Image (cartoon, rainbow, N blue to C red; front, top):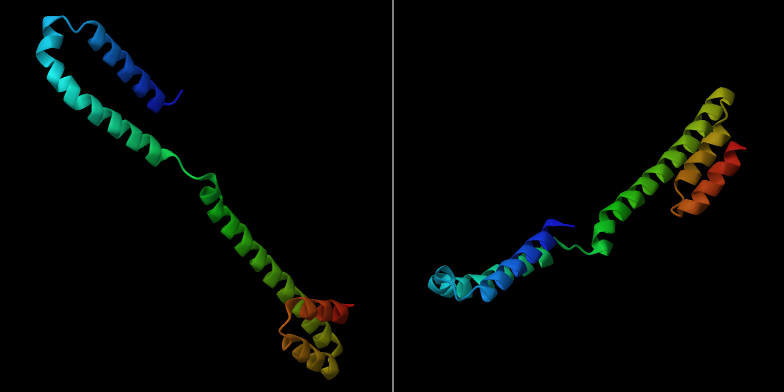
Length: 123
């Protein structure tokens, strides 16, 4: 049970006790304060409850953004690894034609096509 529910139940119990024992001198003397403070306390309590509840969809957004950015970074890392592997193989064979092909592939704007060509060049 959360503290909001405990506060609400205790407030309701106090209100019921004051109404039941309203014929006592203490309650008669302080009744006007209760009538003023009770709506204020209820309003504050409802305001606190409405402020603490969060939309679960908005709570997931930062996580989704983080996952999306991680996916982009992984994609870039894979692409760089492929380019590095090709450059290493080209350096080993000292093949100018492979380096020219690599430059042509790097110039391709479409990511999926660029990756396919890089994968084909690796072997």
